[in-house]
Amino acid sequence: MTEVEPQSHAEPGTPVRGDASEKQLGFIRVLARKCELDDQALGDFVEDLTDCVGLEALSRAAASQVIEGLQDKARKQGVDLDSQPAASDKQLNFLKSLRRRAGLTDEAFQALLQEVAGVEQLEQVGRRDASKLIDMLLKRADQPSEPKPTAPSYSAASDSDERPPEPLVAPPMPDDLPF
Image (tube, rainbow, N blue to C red):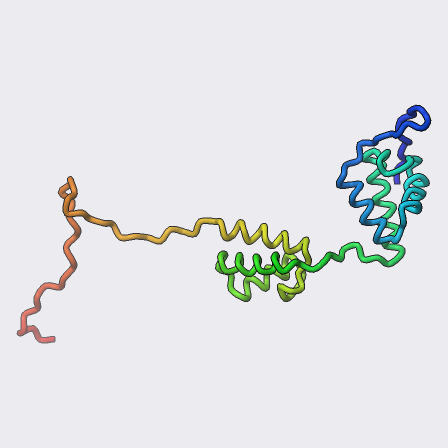
């Protein structure tokens, strides 16, 4: 890991606001919960790692360093960071509807589930993977299907002399042919 310099040298007692994104700060809070760190323990962890006092003082680089540190801590504690909550009923029903709209067979849909989410059945899909599947199926369902060929239409009121072709009829066969 790289060294991160402390935030600005403001007047003592003046809160310092870093430029860490809300997304980074939210992820830090999620990781802290997974590591079972309360606010005090998280504050100590952040200060030990970055010399910043509080999450709000973190720069983007310092926040990234805290995220890496919390991920390492979680892995050492045996926390599964890849787990995700199950897809909602709303997501599952929408996926079923999109599957029909996209015209996917059971086999094609199961292959898509395996490819995107690594699962065999729709009920095993997590929320994050359900969102990916929804995006993919929306794109497929919204793609225009190939137009079906249509026969040319001829109107009796047409301005041109073009008429429909005469049907092909075999010429009459004389009855005295030896076939």
